[in-house]
Image 1: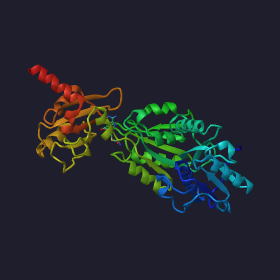
Image 2 (image 1 turned 180 degrees about the horizontal axis):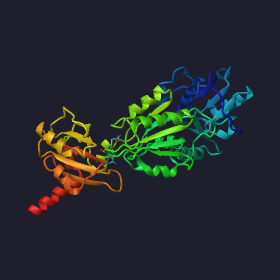
Image 3 (image 1 turned 45 degrees about the vertical axis):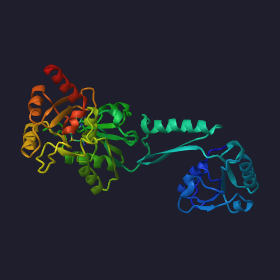
Image 4 (image 1 turned 90 degrees about the vertical axis):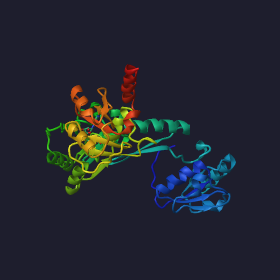
Length: 404
Ligand SMILES: C[S@@+](CC[C@H](N)C(=O)[O-])C[C@H]1O[C@@H](n2cnc3c(N)ncnc32)[C@H](O)[C@@H]1O
């Protein structure tokens, strides 16, 4: 077999058989723009809602079904019928795929996977004498392309682009597959302090890495300068990943950066990341909601005073950037009606080897944090869910043992 990619737009394709194999191929042919006709006495569940434009003849195949077709796919589950369909197609000079015995057909569909990159889609197509083996190899290669350190950069001149990528809470294992694909497609990576730094080691040494990390009260690279860098590199025909901590749209100025790109006419994609607001409590064993304990949660910044906050301890508050203002925030929460006994956990450097958890109540947590030298980055969790975490349980069972 000679590997070839063909344009199926507007091409009449006959699919004989209504089982799951036929269903997968019918969808793929229709997605590729073919005019698909299905001939089968019955359709499996996957084919009962036929893709738009696909016609079904509810009967067995007849020779005239092949008239005017340019490609035939047979997967009837009956080797004799499939063999006959191949024979009829071959007599008429039509390419024919036999799904039940691929070597007897005159065409094969390779095991395929696509990896969309900002400068075009990469398609992996594997064929071998054993279709199952092809699928295994396809799966491994496409997984490696999506998530492994495969250099996907285009070396030819191309239009510049920017991707605002959520890097998660700091552990490179929590990057999304899309984040990795884009990182390995980028010519420039503009990285924040809280984004996973270790992923940089997997990039090609030619990739330009710009560290614009902000620290509390100290902004080494101002926001307008970051916006300018993104636009300038993209305008120079480079692919730019702006690797941000957590999710770009959760207290992350992602929209400001997106708008700067849009205003400059630079193509921009936003890739969600795992926000520290969810991941960091989870890493400390604290679910932000739990049936019977908390029905919802609210994420707020500790930098500014937020006027209306839920006061019942069954509604979880997750405070980011809350360490410097912790005494004022806790006092305000109590003054506004939260119980002084409401449980609080502070999780520093969550999802990293330096993670540390401090637990207390609204009344005690600011003092405990000062005594333990709690530092940013940290997530403050306020509410009854804190009682579910191992640190609260350990602290309170120790108290009980001491008082017994
Ligand atoms: C500017 S906000 C950005 C939040 C980010 N966009 C997100 O979705 O996680 C930075 C704050 O996120 C929190 N944070 C981010 N990563 C953290 C981590 N690994 N451990 C604890 N807190 C973290 C801290 O409250 C930190 O001050």
